Every structure is written in C-alpha cells, then in structure tokens.
Length: 526
Image (cartoon, rainbow, N blue to C red):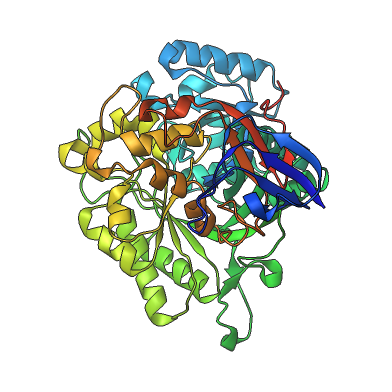
C-alpha cells in the first residue's frame, strides 16, 4: 500500500527516461512509480494538486547555513544610510551587549559607504566591547582596538580592516559560538531554504578558516538533526584547515586527515560529510579575488589565500587521501592555481570518480574552459551574484572580462558539469531567481552581463536539480523524480518552462515536500 498518491499534477521529473507524468506514488519517503505504475495500488491518502507543476526539490550545492542564521539574527547596518548611521547602530548594539562580550554586526559593505569603517571610529561607539563587523562577502571584516590588541603579531590590517587570512585570525579569536546558538541559526536558515523550495544543500565549510563558528560545529548539526530541527538534508564540507598531518601507514597515502580518518561519504540520508573545502582566494565584493590583471580603477589584482605551493600541496594531499575536493576559486588567477593543482593531483595519484569541484568560478577566461573539461571539474556557480551585484562586478572587470563572469553556456558547450548554488547569505538564495538570471543574464537594474552565456530554462533547472545532486554525489537518490529516489519535491503554481523568463522568479511556491511529507513553508519564525 502506498503512503501517498499525488494526482492531477504536471510532474517535470528531470528524468530523461520519463520526462513527465501526472500521478506519483510514495511509500516510506521514496518514489514508488509514476502514472500507470501506481494507479492500481491502494493508498492511505490521495492528494489532488489541482494542476500544479511539480519538480524535484531544488538542491543548493553551496550555502552557509550557520552563518546565514547568525547573520539574520544579529544587529545589522545599512551601508546606504551612511557612516554616521552605521556607527549609531553599532553603538546601540554595543550598549545592549554585556561587558566583555563580542558585538557581531552584519550587513557591512564598504562600497555604498565610499570607504571602509576604521578601528578608531568603532572605538568611539564600542563602549568597551569587542566589535566584529563582518563584510557581506565573508572575506573581510572591520574590528576595533579591543580586538586588534588580541591578534597575534604579524597579522596585517589597515585601520582595523582585515581580509582573508586576517579575517580567519579574527574568527579564531571569536570562536566558539555555543551549540545552542548554532542550532537556532541552522534551523532559521534551513527553514528559509525550505520556503524557497530547497530540500537539500551543501554547507560549504566547517572546522576552521574564514567561516567556522565553533570547533565542534558538527555537534550542532547532529543536535539539530537528532531533535528534529534540521529542516532539510545537509551535506557538510570540511575546510582544509581542519586536516592535520597524519601518522598513518605510508602505504595508505593519507598525509593529512581528520580525527578518526573521516572523509567524503560518511553519514546518512539527512546529514553527512561531503567534500573538502579549500580556499585559494577572496571575493569580488571586497576586491580580494585573485585576478591575472588588476581591477578596473584599482592598482592591485586581489590576493591568494595562501602561498600557491602550500595550496597545491593541500589539494594534492586531499586528493591522495580520497577526498572529493571543493576548491574555492573566484578570480581567474585563483582558477589557474586550482586547475594546476588538480592536474598535478590527477597525474601523480590517478583515481576515478573524484567529482572535484571549483566553487564560484567567478571569472573564467576562455582558455580555462577547456581545462575544466579535461580535468572533469564541476563548476559550482552562484547566478544570484550577478542579479544582485552584477552592475558592480561588470564595472570592476571592464568590457573585455565582464562576459566571463559566472558563465553558463561556456561551461556546457565545453562539456563541463554545471551546478547551481547561492553562497547564502552573501546574497539571497532563491533558486527561481537564480534560474531566471541564468536564462536572461540580466541584473536587477536590467543590465545584460555576458549575454552569450545565457542557457535554456531546462538547462538552468538541471543545474539546480540533477546537476547539483551530481556535484554532491547524490544523483542516485536525489535530483529527479524517479522510482527509488527520495520523494523530495517542490510544487509550483506555474511551469518555469512555460512562463515568460522575466516571470520565473515570481512563480508562486505552493509546497515543499521532503521524504514524502509536506514541510512548513512559512519561513523562519520571527
């Protein structure tokens, strides 16, 4: 007997063996069959979907749930209101914080302000607290003198502004948040994802570096899962910084490892360990993404996260030890470093099924597309970056390079696997908005960025379903509406393939189903 039969719907399965259907059977959280395969089976309940369109649940291949939840629940500033207003808000937050505690501030972006805040300015409103103003990119921050005094010797800053490794040093001081705080944050961000039709995601970095919030962050995810407060499926990427030199047998080829030797693939249906996350550069918002040529109007071309040789050794060690690698590379110079290291890893330690990924691939030159394909590297992109930030990114790249930003068609035409993601909370993460951008290549102001990189609606949907599932090694259980796979679904008022592209982001989401159960899509509680 079926648990549920869904009828009177337009199922867009993303399964080439059976692209469409009108009826679906579910048993114990999995798809049993479609149409005539389930018509004769009894069901405990039958639900009429009134002609709605049903797609596989969207998969976000690169998010930061804990950071997103913490950011949403912390005091924020509005850079557009100016420096005086920002300092007033920071001062109010400081006065409401217990003496000796950290004051975490979100919503910071130096661009509307015209310049960065300074440590001296923060000192005037900090009320003796340690002030930590986090850049929206996650790759930079501004802190006051109370924090600077705690930093180790040799950590560079400019008037309290720290980027990349300096930002990581501040994170190290700030740790840890409590597990209870993190569970609240994870649940909050997870519910936002579910409200947007996302049923599974990859948490892009725990264990250290720029974005870690606790040395026991996995415990927060486990507690959330055990207590029913993990709203969606989550795969945890471990940052490369968390690996330590291992004293394993030389024949094992494990130069670095986590405690207990955990690696990609450990875990269950709801929560598990995914790829090894390795940073090679910064971001375009703070102008730290590593480019081969300078930013337009600036006298520098960003920076690498660490010495290229050290980055290469970490990538090679991770590959040799059996990890799937998720290498953060935004600028084209960083992409060169990542591709060179992955090529060396494959050459020195050949193995199949690696599914290595480059996260962001923000600026990819034409000559680099072929190398992505040859190395069988998946491009995990964030289309919403260009919807929300594309005017700025195009300006700082200039006319020649702007068409290379967050490519779509270029990857697909070269046979490169393409996965969609958000990098939430850097920008809002709604998949339908991202899908619309991939089709139109238009920013929020209407500017076209890299129009030749536009792809079809079907290709964009694939990037957020089967493409993202493959990037996370989930394609056997997620990504399409197929017998045996998890019954993770998103129910929409209209078919994205049938409406005008300009309306895709506005399609009403009617329901999200995870493991055959309709989820609460009201969004996070206030």
